[in-house]
Image (cartoon, rainbow, N blue to C red; front, side, top):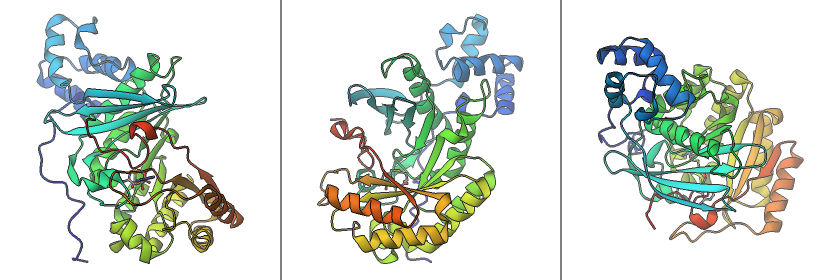
Length: 368
Ligand code: SAH
């Protein structure tokens, strides 16, 4: 297919300087070697960064002064918070941050009674152009580096530990549902997942079961992820079960159709044993019809298997300039009932962060 522009290619903007979190353990040892330090300094540094969650070289008192100065170059400040906003009684916190080149992106930390989740960005902007999503309206600025992604998680984990959500909390979940299409920045996202899930001091030690990668449905990249053997949860932003409407709601559907996306999701579920999550933003009079709920339920049951899939309905969040809004409650309830009647699990996601434009599809990195 040639008619679709190369929306998967990020503009060639310079990625940030090398950072410890870009490197795997062997590369870290090599990097400290280049600085003239013995390999074990890399392990000390990793214990501070991934274990103590600090990038402040001055607190690394087990490093001699000269070594401290040397390792500073491996910890350039890549993600500098410029605005923090909170709502939902302080349990939702959005951070707008700036990269080394002035690039802006956002992360959202959310506390729940039983867990704490950070929603991270994988790109500055997004090239997927879904018309109901604020991020999609601005286009793609650039990919984020592995370290820029890991830094969002490290800072969120440190904030949660230090009581940002109330009582000190351990960050348990990471969802790639912020700005960007994670599978369009494949290598850096997968490297970030490894840093996030490897036990300390190699990584942050967050269980892969607590990590979710969400995609519009880039089929070859889903298959690549299947082959990685990382047991993360895959979420697919489907939004409608029919190609005709999906071609407009999720433009990449012009390249990979619903049936191909669901087949890739099935392969993922079979290979990993993990339930696939189907994201569905419910839009009034656009995709909330009873027949679509029935078609969704039967397609998922047949194509993926009722036990291997879970539908996550997202009441549409308002975005600037959009004429669409959420479905009325009775329509939403009926939609849930019909999907469940097909034997497929279906729940409605809570709409955290709406007042601070931190909810699904509202991230636009604007400085209000
Ligand atoms: N690009 C990836 C990662 C972003 S996840 C993906 O699309 O899956 C963000 C989720 O919020 C996606 O499921 C997206 O479709 C959904 N979303 C976007 N705009 C929304 C809106 N206005 N209201 C509710 N959900 C929205």
